[in-house]
View 1 (tube, rainbow, N blue to C red):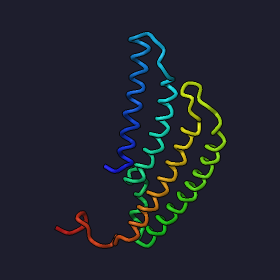
View 2 (view 1 turned 120 degrees about the horizontal axis):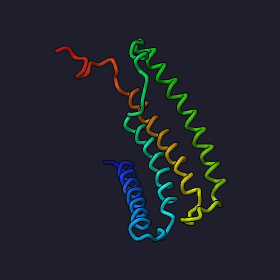
View 3 (view 1 turned 60 degrees about the vertical axis):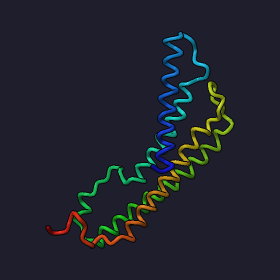
View 4 (view 1 turned 90 degrees about the horizontal axis):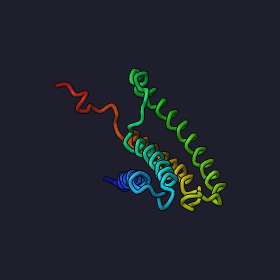
Length: 158
């Protein structure tokens, strides 16, 4: 397990612990939780979503419609892949840019329960976007370096 996976696990455990604490305080002890656990869980959920999307890029597990591209010749497949990567890169750069602007704009807005700046949760979009871009480009470059026409275990005759 790499650092991203460890952070994802820690954030998930944090969400479960925070939500469990909120339930215990409210329904067992009938007290208000010591901090706004709902707000804290929302912050952690934003980070979980952003880092989870990046993990999807890392493991190439996002949904892809490749039934058409599989029927194309190798050169056309490479062209379509390059177009998809270029389009996604443009989108992710714009996403990162506008997420950074938003994060900067909300830096002085303080959450009422936790006292944390709203930029703590908003920055998850920037970090997630950067990681998605990184993993997408890394995967694409690795695909370019590999030889797709070489026989694999799946295509070798038996």
